[in-house]
Length: 417
Figure: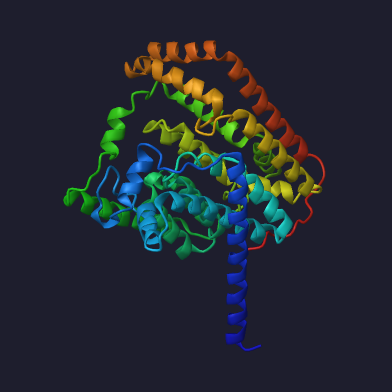
């Protein structure tokens, strides 16, 4: 077959793959609406600000003009009659479409890809943002999946890093892991650090231009440093709240992550990079809470290892039945823990966050004794939540490691790319 014909066939095949992914993503999004109905208005605060920015993205106005990607895309979709709220739902569906495409590439199975995508549709990676419309976070998660997929293609990889920075600057918190991921996928130390530096320079130049034109916004680095009243002594309490939300939003799906970690699958170049990834990824994630306490929004950032864990689990002997069972259990747990859709993090976390707001003065003092009193008081009042969370985490870890010691993978060949 001539080269041109082969190229045309490949292009059609790729187009059909993405079309199928879009259909599956849309269907799963609609099904997930039965679990958590989407809001019909932008979320008060940041959601409203993003929606306003989308009206005139090139004005670079608002509290965070540097996060231009979501408003720009929403503005473009607005030209065909798509509202900002509908565009937010489209982003959720796009995440599910990318997950399906990614899973199919990794497993070479439609059934496996559908099961993994269904699990993601029932997780906090999607459901957290149903009540929180007009946030850019779903785009960040989508781009992180693509970063992992294209980790062995330097130009594409670093282009995605730069694109992610224009969605949210938090990507630079993950710089050690990002550079390491490239090094584990054929990159060389100094060239990769140089490319990271170019991304930082281009993004930094954009921020300088915004500042020179008077479009600094409210939420710059100085704002976060000035308002981080919980640092350093209150950080353990914030981290515990984050862990609690992770358990609530991902529940039994975490079993896959612990399974893959025990098997060493997450430490592969095509996954999280290599054996040092936990020492680079998790500290980077936790360091975000040095500047912000948005534990609800930081919880979905465990998405990448959870997704890779589900992919590892579905490839295990009997993996289809296991993942299907986890989806059913996850749906039940999520419905039980989130009786009111507008209560992000569930009923229990709503109680916890209310108590945090009522006692925020103890953290505002920035004294170790006050922070200890705050943390101990929270544990004393909500010891039953802490106990159940600890037992659930222990059960998920044990089940993941137990499954890792039994059975075998359906295929030990390299994952498709």
